[in-house]
Length: 288
Length: 279
Image 1 (cartoon, rainbow over the protein chains, first blue to last red):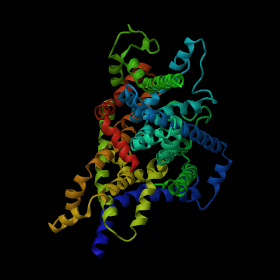
Image 2 (cartoon, chains in turn brown, blue):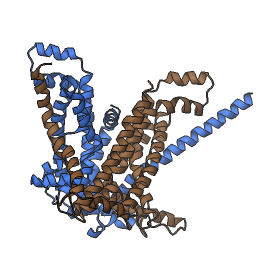
Image 3 (spheres, rainbow over the protein chains, first blue to last red):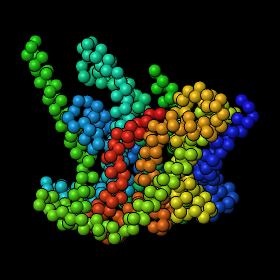
Image 4 (cartoon, chains in turn orange, yellow):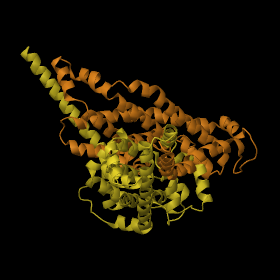
């Protein structure tokens, strides 16, 4: 490898690396720095742990963190199971396959903000669609977004609806890659439907499941658009999620130092997810 | 024996129909919100929860929505931002992807690992610092301000690197003997052969940035650069006092271009998402 070529490689990488430095690496470092040296809107007031002390004492932070974990713990498995079931249906000899696939996948294409506007009407008390339908059966309905016990679950319902179709296509691709010979052989051996699913389909879908799992977990922490329309984290933070809380602190309460400490917490969560992905999972999935 | 086999056949037929029926129920539930938006948008406000076959059709909601918000500038902004980002991404990711795939420079593994970090730490998470950077560049409320953090896409670099690696080295060597420079080789050998990957990446990138919200919300503050998503959030806010039929009409206006493109190129969209995800 000549010196020239070395230089050339760096030249080709330069624009991308410069932008990544400016908008990913530097801000990451700056966020950590600011969380230890900032106070309120002020920078460089000297090294201090005040932001982290505030964070530990902040009940809202712990509530938001718990909300986010519950949100992930419910939406991730439910959307993955639904995605798998959808993929199995769309991959079988069912009538109207194309239309079904379209129906399942369409929510994925639409902007979260736009569909949240539609769902906002579904959830509205008094005149909203869900309560109107419940009213036909003589039920007085729920305060979907205003009830602190319900608002987080209302958000989850919409998130599951939005995401399941997206994960379905990855399962669909994987299912289409499984050789039909395997099923024929199993059938000859007298394996029933359930056995075939459990012994052939599920294990062969394992890499896809792990891929989808990681992405679903990341999305549970990265995607908070619907909060802006549906609940704004309310009532009283009952449906608040971490990234939305960061936004509130930075751009509504103007406490960028505390927002930086919160961002560090979010970065730590992402690092943990990354470690799980590269550590445990990568080693287990290489069965081929 | 034969009775048992007819019984099990009957049973499997029943499970089959049950499964088909559930698939359809779920499909209807999934498409329902969109169908509902169409219903509300094309009927007078009195019919938002009153479903009747005799409900009169109207376009009044669309006219009202169109006059209540500057949809035209939102739409222009969204298209401009999406294309600006895509154009930069395609160029930057091609150059970086080639270097990582074909030049064995020192520190390649480390650089690649650093780049992949952005798959986890997306620019939205760093809104606090990134806003300050854009503000210091005086780029708040401009297309460039919205686009800059996304120009270098780790995802695009990764995808193109993987694709370039599958292209036979002999093609590059042959082109070099013909006297092509590296940039010419990239343009004439690698880019044409990686076309499906470019299409896949473009569709994924377009849907992502057409739908992106949090960062544009932070970094735009007038209709000069505000994209559709941010416009819709303001439009739909209860304070603005519009009624549901009008909101649904506005929603349909905002999703129409992408929805039509999706319906026309459904197969490509799905294939692209799979290709982009599985790599």
